[in-house]
Image 1 (tube, rainbow, N blue to C red):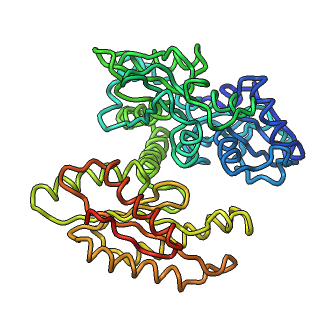
Image 2: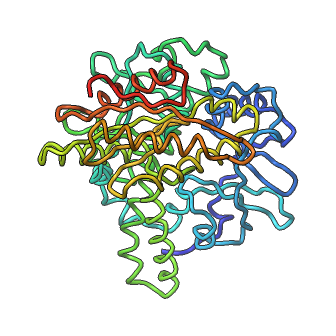
Image 3: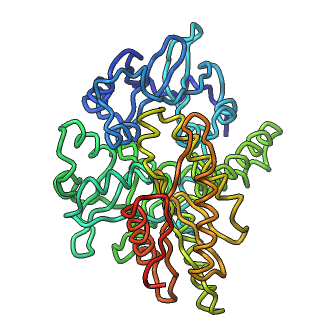
Length: 444
């Protein structure tokens, strides 16, 4: 193993745009060069706009003629090309983040990612022996939609989740995939959002067997220019979708075992990798904006709570909470204030619930709350405390904001989607009756 400089591993195939260019200019460059991101040059600073950003802007109905200078962009960390991979691991906490590699005069030399760093430290023993199926020790879920699903629903899902692709099925059989690249083309062609998923999906669906090695997978990424691999078992059944980040995190764990047998310099790497693993665990379970549970973690905790409820006959209630007229906050005050409102809302609710309760961001301005050992009458009292606390709180510049809440009992034979649907119907009733209300599902 050795520690190469960033100059040795940086990709110089970088597509750039000026800060005064428009969003549409960036989209065209992505499409023309088959890139999922464009580096935006702003004097001595470098930002990035990605396919995920374009999805968000499309859903939020932002005019693509808007200059990039008026769009919220992520600023990339910068290192000189003489820096080594240890320095690179120290400057970023985000697994998918790019790092700008700069010349002596500060101009852009190239980009490196965490996957570039992993591949550069020569972990061939691990890469050639570890099978990609082993990273599914824990559940790596994937979302599927019917081929006739409306693209509006898929865009809404992808806007508020970490996932950047969905599987498309017909009669419960996978027939294609909708990726960020497909979405870019969909946006570029200015399709109506009401078309079916089958009209833009990539098909046929290419897969890799779970017994393939990580090295095989990395080569697959390189040769196919894919961002993820759909992994199947012996029966050709999909068991999950693995990205380069998934491979990296698993490889990090193996490296930490090897690092302890090498020189003092590797001890520094070992500490960094342990910090990365903790950060990855947080990313996998927490919503990045509000720091409460994310949708995937809520689904896992719901199953555990349901099992406990069945075993001991404990009442469990599910609440769906939605901020009223939240779009007006973003439209009037901007997304920074909107983000502040979401974070503050989460803090208020967190202080009002018990440690045993499960609170999560479901997506956008929607939240879910699972109340342990609580029947619907008790849940209504708890919901009203939350609703009143929000109604009487002043959200600084945004002023007074209200929320609507729907409640349902969680039945022993429920699955999450069924319980969510009932809570959502109650929430819809609260909205329909004038907002700033709590409604309990009639099945309670």
